[in-house]
Length: 265
Ligand code: KIV
Image (spheres, rainbow, N blue to C red):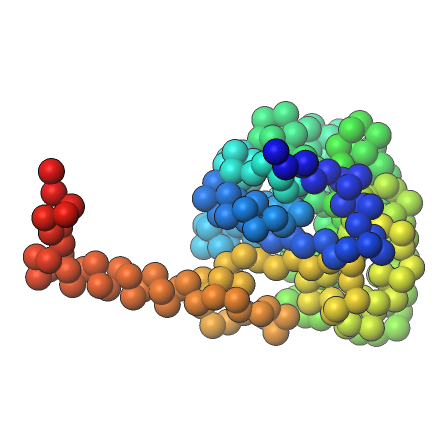
């Protein structure tokens, strides 16, 4: 019987071991991720891109996120399941954020939620935490602000921006987040932030000094085509393997070699 990874246990990894996290959006992927012993399954709002074909994360709804989070939770026994709060599910008011975050725990079986944004989210985040909802912070390139950023660009290159991101990290730590995703910042800034906070930092394009790493599973498996960000390492070419398998199946059916005797009753 596995001991489930919780916010407190993940916090305890700081300085002791790396936090290893991937996204998952469905039951089957969740089972495989869990079998590999990862600490956290993030039901990222990147499912808007990977599963639903949108070009940004903005359109994904609460109902879609709940649906996918519940599927992931059914496939997991060990990893912590964190659901991404979608665009406009927490921005309007603390009451709205509490009600929607609560739904992920009550209805979908998540163990916590992730929220994008820095110091200005501190009060709302601490309300969630005081009400029993573990929160994972997310700073740097926060994709829900893509219209504000004007593109997927490295953040924190200018000194003033780097200082603001450090201040954001400290404010989120103060608000009580159990860990902090840092996306797409120079590796040196990833290190400064990691050295300055007592909670684990989980980098995605934030260099090797972060306390842990997260990637979008479709990118790592080679299911996202060839236009992936520089920070992605491809660990498999499942996209090519799928096309090969589908092509062979098509050929077999067309020439009548499938089904053969062994597949018949
Ligand atoms: O939605 C997402 O996949 C994320 C990343 C941090 C991986 O937020």
